[in-house]
Image (tube, rainbow, N blue to C red; front, side, top):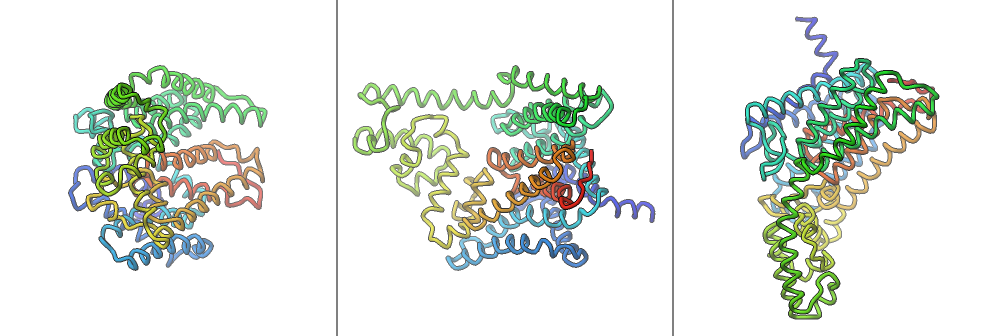
Length: 486
């Protein structure tokens, strides 16, 4: 018993990571309107880790500037909302807890990851999670109990609750990056070939733009890196490296060739068939009246009463079906101007983008204090159906200019450490792990824009926190000789 207990104590990070896919499965089978058991477990883990670091770990003091800045972001947000009079304090608190999870876990992991053993536990844990995610998706598909990625019945997300469908693509992307690392570093040919192939199946069938772009990034990024490193270090690729490079290159080409038959393309086709028909009918109707809608500016639209009314009616079709509160709360002149008078149905039919426009209006109409520290969550509507899907917009509008600036500074600081490592020992820094972390972190920043929820959902943001901690550990010794790790 003591031996098992000691092993669990020494491998706590590995076990914590391996629990993440299982918690998502738990969330799927215990979901309710009040939340999920997994969500409460994750918040409890955050609280326990933060308390442990503050009480037991002395080096947390070096992170006091980051801790102070993060605390100020949320404290000042709450103070601003209190000054204006809270609409829904509990709702805003839940939003804060979901957003504070990433910085808290990142600081905790950075404080605790003080050895190669812990860093290697993180690497192994993410790779094991790739295996677990594969098994879960396969089981859900075989049993017919999987959740579709899109409500149209397209894409496979596995046992994922509805709110996490798109977020799950962020998780898949993060673990698949490390699956790519595992396939590149393995000396077994079947792993060099099989693992990229599994990544291909998982990401293609998921169906999101993020999954598809991740697949292309992995299949192009690793072979290019291996080639560049061999040229810089003047070494030759061994048999396994050649096998994985050829496999990934072939999968890259295959991904492009079969795109018209992928779930991602089918979703785009559905949207185009619906939206293009609306646009064509409107353009034809206006052409019959003597207007070329593709050449009209907002000034032209507002200056002509007939054209003005037709444009309002056209915009109403999109606004009331996508973001209904915006059409009831704001004038259509302002909406038309925000879209620069476009009639492009692909743009107007983009619900994700329209939510950004709607919340931007709320943000712009707020007082200076609110714009500095963020709007209250309930101002978008109590049902939250118009919650922002893109994290970067969410950080700006929910946490204000101050919160957005702190986030940008934190990201720049991480890149500053990476550039410092490259400057100190460029050749020594060209390791498989360093490239994987850089590729993954850049992709995660992109996911925060193109997908969202990776910074606001603990099941996905824990991977961002881990990438940050591993980057921080690998760049920690920039003032001394850099130890090359594979």
